[in-house]
Amino acid sequence: MKSVDDFRLKLGDKEVVPIMVGGMGVDISTADLALEAARLGGIGHISDAMIKTVADRRYNTKYVREKLKLYKFNVANPDKSVVQFDLGKVAEATHLHVRGAMERKRGDGLVFINCMEKLTMNAPKETLQVRLKAALDAGIDGVTLAAGLHLGSFSLIEDHPRFRDVKLGIIVSSLRALQLFLKKSGRTQRLPDYVVVEGPLAGGHLGFGMDWAAYDLATIVAEIQLWMTENQLDIPLIPAGGIFTGSDATAFLESGCGAVQVATRFTVTRECGLPDDVKQHYFKASEDEIEVNQISPTGYPMRMLKSSPAIGAGIRPNCEAYGYLLDSKGRCQYIDAYNKTVAAHPDARRVSVREKTCLCTHMRNFDCWTCGHYTYRLKDTSNRLADGSYQLLTAEHVFHDYQYSKEGKVALPD
Ligand SMILES: Cc1cc2nc3c(=O)[nH]c(=O)nc-3n(C[C@H](O)[C@H](O)[C@H](O)COP(=O)(O)O)c2cc1C
Image (cartoon, rainbow, N blue to C red; front, side, top):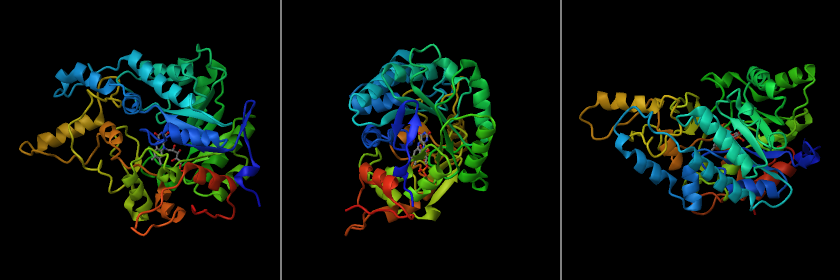
């Protein structure tokens, strides 16, 4: 019987352990977590979601305060089109985050950055280009283009000197999305180096509608595999979403996949950026405490713990400080939902907005508890302590459990 360790992912001339820890914004997949995956010979992700906020937290910069100061005059205005990101500062913050991680990298693995294109930042194309170029300049090993995949993204960086040597990957949830991307990016004569196929059990935003339960990862992967063989395309496929044990991972590798992308099991590690008390909520969650809802202003369904403080909160939009989800016209679905609720309750001192949530603020404060479907199984991966809490794991422990375990077993920590 095989384990994940019997396989290796080949990316160009590089061979790594075929375990990729997925990107988790905002700073949930920290540099520390990504660096552990790389040290152990696999691939870790940092994320560039809300990069200025992350830089302020990690590098003592004051980007958010400065932006708020600049646009404070606009706080009560529902039209946020004047609230623009300073591209130089986006580049600077990205540089700090990526350099800071890459300088600390040890071992044979790789550190990639997860770049969610749905963070349209009031100027989708310009900000995305700056984010990507700054990450390449700062020496990132690879970029995974995620949520809201922009079909022309490769062309935004095709004149960068590292365009052909950096590893570039995309996340898709259907064969059709992959076909569209390959068609559009064909002009750059550059195929993705890997394709993450994310199924409906993943955490974060889903590439499915509210009928997500009608889909199944293995079926989507098999369909894409067949199409790639028919079209003589040799790009490693990396399934993601609900791969909970080493045996789940091994089954995908035996069927010809290049690696697996996993995240949920790492949310309860010390290196994960969630506060420790939130990690305990993840450990303790039962299946019926997890839902897929539509409160993300991105328009994509998102999986969360039902007890997430972000659900039904009613804070005033914070776009002058953050504004990562503003579209090219300075709009965000939360602004509309908030104003509608306030108009319906003119005398209320506080409102509860049910329709949408202020994702920027709640992700920044770690009170949007997005999670994978199998979060309810996390309690089986650790020891319960005398006070009723669960023992936090190390990233090394979880990584090795994926790498070596067999027969559907999950190793408990010492
Ligand atoms: C807490 C959490 C946050 C996530 N955030 C992101 C994100 O910012 N960008 C992204 O592309 N995927 C995100 N994901 C998806 C993961 O990268 C990964 O593909 C998926 O969750 C793998 O499935 P698993 O969690 O069942 O192992 C997130 C997942 C979790 C659990």
